[in-house]
Length: 181
Image (cartoon, rainbow, N blue to C red; front, side):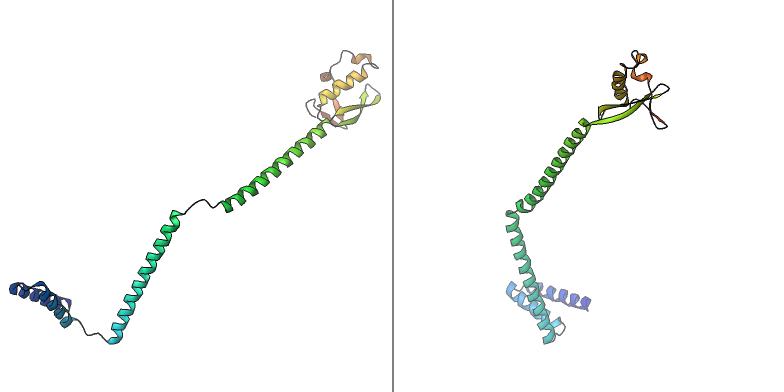
């Protein structure tokens, strides 16, 4: 069908050029030509076409309005301070709380390290000699042995030339090295 329409149109245009008609006459003849070869359309189809064209126009207008609205909003884009301030405030509060807890923990650790405890020990040279000594919690076994030697030097002459590395610290059946606290 389209081939026949194209052929007839070409022939029609050829004769128009031969006749050298003015433009207005040519456009009128073209409209007549199109109406002659357009398939018949019912009124319902014509109404649907009009409805579709109006629907397209409305959609196009809506798109244009949305584009204008987006352009207006894009000129006003900025940082939303309300949302971010709340987030930063929460993180700031959490960070401060962590710092306070860390500081409290450090103070408690220092207090515990500086706390003095009484250690009961026994010097054994064939017979057991029980004594008590006060020490800070963070001291090593070597420091404990040095302090106990100082306390025992008065009673035992053999300890006058002794150093802490010459002694062993035994707790029940376990020998504990000097570098432990």
